[in-house]
Length: 120
Figure: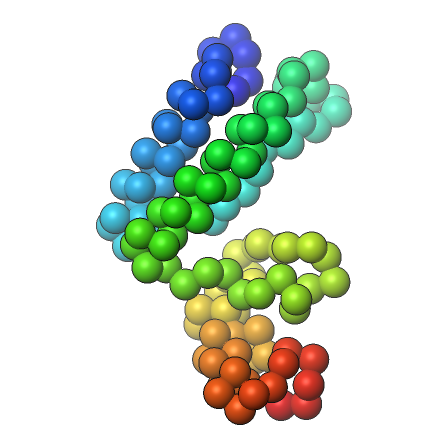
């Protein structure tokens, strides 16, 4: 929604972003969700922040598309001391790794009735 060339309204911005995600997910590609931030000293430093409604609607669209294309949700946020981290290393470990944060290990622990902070 950065001006002067960005979208002027939330609905158009969300529709465009979701359209790109839909194309990627329909072709088996899971795009990494990342939020735009305004950095001081950058060319966007004086931009207005997008309204809260934008962030709510774009996250809702991303989540609905993940459900539509049956992508597993990212690993539970309880594995991080931060609220909800997403990064490519964590994504790779979840989908392809064998450690405690991997989907394989989480499924094993769930089947055994263990939580992530229990001894595995």
